[in-house]
Length: 264
Image (cartoon, rainbow, N blue to C red; front, side, top):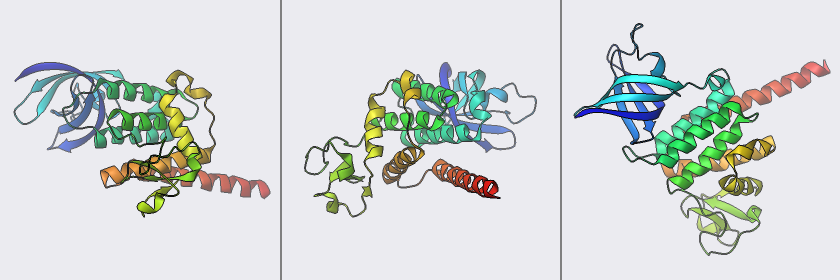
């Protein structure tokens, strides 16, 4: 029992009763926690503005028997550049959903919090926001122990300097060489370039990420490989991945329409 302070990023929320809301927060000090914000849906609530999803906040909470209660919440950052751009919002939502899906409750890992906060800034400021989201995704898997074997065949151990001669296997936890890929009939065939980018992102300095120039196809290939690997471990598809795919289809429609307009 008692009050405690935490710094956190609000991952998601859902309504409770007539005026309350339950928040899922990834905190620097305590990892992922859930807490109720009482009366927050009332128009005069002091907590209303600072308890929105995608808010970096300083919180004071009361430890309850079944669920903690937020007594104070001050927004430190609300990422207006992300909120104003549908594409940046979609990639940020993908990151928040990844953390919520993979991070266990009540197990603090400062590296996850720091990497999430850093990557949200990248998504907000980079010319290509998807780079920030991809950077975060590969690092989150590494931090939480889900990093696939990308240098050698996960079955026979042979070196794979040319990743185009491989397939990604969830059940084996990494790449399979051509001789071993038949061991997993559900493996994901890779083009090679996306694995090279995956390797590079793991060793890249976040401050220099804006210098990395990738084709749209290469970024999509990496997103598809991550989608396969994440879905294998979660045994479900992330909602944000479907939304990202929808946005990409809209982009293609726009490109097609603009070409047709030009021809006319």
